[in-house]
Length: 304
Image 1 (cartoon, rainbow, N blue to C red):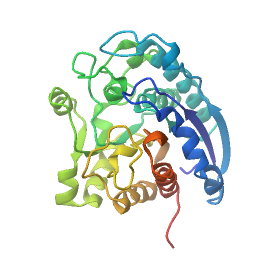
Image 2: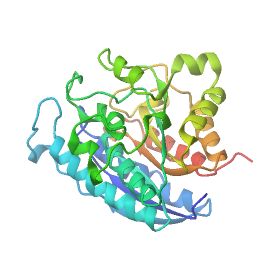
Image 3: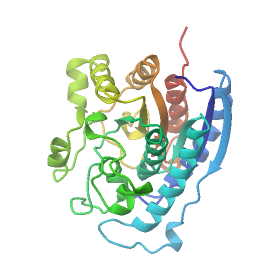
Image 4: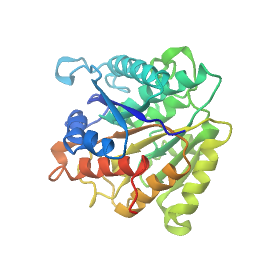
């Protein structure tokens, strides 16, 4: 299933988060040598540049419970179109965020392309947070806490109904890995959604391989591949300090790489995104460098 060409798409979204600076994430990842290092693995690379995003300073905040919602929906639709065309041209889409609300667009474009062939996708969501809030449950109104809910059809119609179908992914084909910070109002939504949710406690007790094996089984049932949405705050902040919502006790450096290596081994990767890299909060581009390394592990780099 491995595609020989990767389409890199920057999504410098800085509308869904509560702290500024994440719009520079795509540049930081590119600066960390992403293109050249992917070429060293034998891939053809097509960098499609960045999707257009409204600037917060020149944009009305809009509804308090879903800040910048219209502008986020517009950007996600544009991103979804770019992803859709990349997949239709038999390229593997690699999206560089931006805050995690960009995943609504990435998943929409990928799901649309597969749907036209009568196929479904699975979704592996690697994150310290569940991102399952709604405007009614969100304590902050920041849309980057809502994208997974939108991908399974639970959220504002502006986001759930991009390309006029919902859900983009069946909840039974979704696995969250690395949870350790879930809003109290969000807990019943996670438990009742029908997704597979693996907390850090489960990783500690069972080991990462056991968790990844079960997650892959979940997202592969009845699908023809899966998308990986990797929020860098899933990794412990000692390894990834440049994120807007750091939480202690995350994946170690080696656990993060092992997760990507296991996903690569099953040869079902349909798309990937790295999000929430915030250079303003980073140390010597450490988080972006790690993000590039994780992409390489997911796409075939091996120790031997």
